[in-house]
Length: 148
Image 1: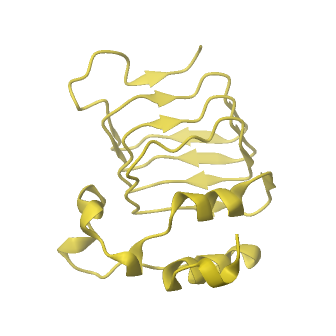
Image 2: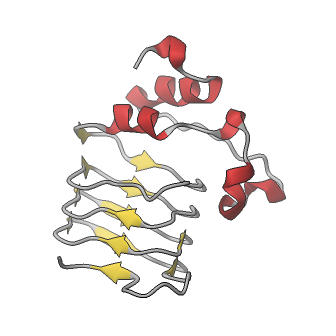
């Protein structure tokens, strides 16, 4: 992926990532609700392929994607990271089977109407699900799968 192909929002994330820096896209008003994130404009959007390019391999920095709206279920199958924090986000589901987190996986205050798949996951710290809403779409099947 070439830097020139990135949007301004993606460039902010790309520049901050190597040093573990934070990028804030919240506006401080009602539009910050991740459940309505499909209405956010390009100034608050980072494409999945950009995140994938940054996150391929063993990522030494903590990954914090907080207050985000995911249009599609993130597929983190086999990922390795020190920490993953998706708190306050909306995700259609979460595919994280065989993920290795050498610290904390935090899904605090997340809304995940689909299935959370964690079969074979290795989390050396803790899994936080405080106030998380899982499987609320009424679909048949488990809200969380721990073994496959």
